[in-house]
Length: 151
Image (cartoon, rainbow, N blue to C red; front, side):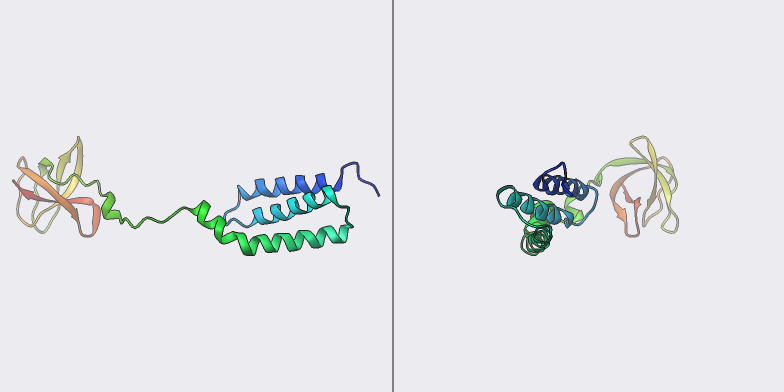
């Protein structure tokens, strides 16, 4: 049965469809099957082959491209890891002076006002409401609680 489309065109369109599917699937694998389709399309454009030969060429080209090119593709499309840690990107407002709005004791957290918002705060000394304190760091167990000291 003859197709109204040339076999090389069918393989090329199948490769485009697989390449588009790669955009929706993680892992960079489907693109190599698309490459196999394009190899078959390229060969069919210059040399006629039987369907069995086309399928065999597709399998061989897909597997070879997967084996030899995947590592290279992963380096390109995954990017390079940075040697910076989260501490290098710290945006803690160290040294800011803020007002205590709820008393702080060594055994219970209080509240401070920073940029118009109330935050939980801890200290190793008693700080009364209305006093000014300096922000030092986050507490050891939460990035939502400031550790402060009296000024």
